[in-house]
Amino acid sequence: MSVHDESTLREQISSLGKSLFDRGLTMGASGNISVRLDDGGWLMTPTNACLGRLDPARISRLDGQGQWLDGDKPTKEQFLHMAMYAERPQSGAIVHLHSTHSVAVSCLPGVDPCDCIPPLTAYYVMRVGKLPLVPYHVPGDPKLGDAVRGLAGQHSAVLLANHGPVVAGKNLEAAVYATEELEETAKLFLLLRGENPRALTEEQVAELQRRFPA
Image (cartoon, rainbow, N blue to C red; front, side, top):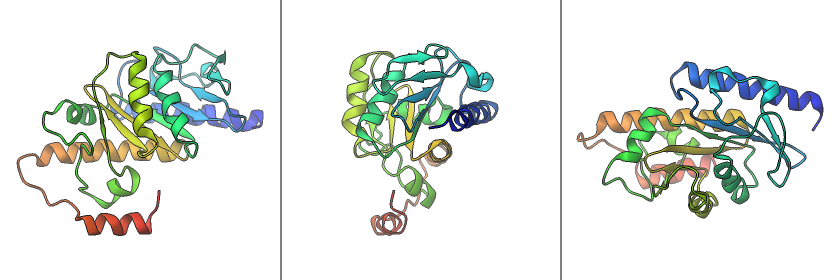
C-alpha cells in the first residue's frame, strides 16, 4: 500500500470515528477501530483515545504479526481485533463500540445467546445477520479473544455480554454501516419488547441471504 493510500485510511478512521462520537454511538475514550493494510499490517486507534478527537498521524501502525511499529500505543483491546481478523481473512476493518442500545441488549436476561436480536428489518439481516452473545469476561482477559475467535468464522458481528458489539466489514465504511444498523436495530428491539413484534420469517431471511450474500 502506498504512503498516499495509508494517509487516506488514517483520515478516514479519524473522520468516521468523529462521526460515531458526535452522534453518541461512543463516548469518552471508549471504542476502537482498525483497518487491514495491503502489506498484512494494521492501522488501529490508540489506547485511551477519544474517537471524536483522533490525530491521523498518531494512529497506531502494527505489522503482520500484530507488533506495534509506530504511532501511539494501540488500544488495549487489540486482541479482540486480532481474534476477528484471524478467522475472517475477507474482512478489511473492524469497529468495536460501547454503543448504548447494543450494550443494553447485551445486559438483558433471556436473550437467545445464538442470536441476540430477531430479524426485524431487511437491512439488519443484510448488514449484520445473526448476532451471537459472547459470555462476560473481564476487559483485557485473553480468554475473551478466544471466545470471539470461536464465533468469528461464522459471524461478522458478535455482542460481548455487558460490554458491546464487535463488527467486521469488507472495508471501514461497511463495518461502520453495519455497526450503525446494529445499534438502530437494538433500539427497535428495546422499543418493541413486550409487544410481540412481527419479525421476518425464515423464508424471508433466506431470500435476503440469497439475493444479498455477505
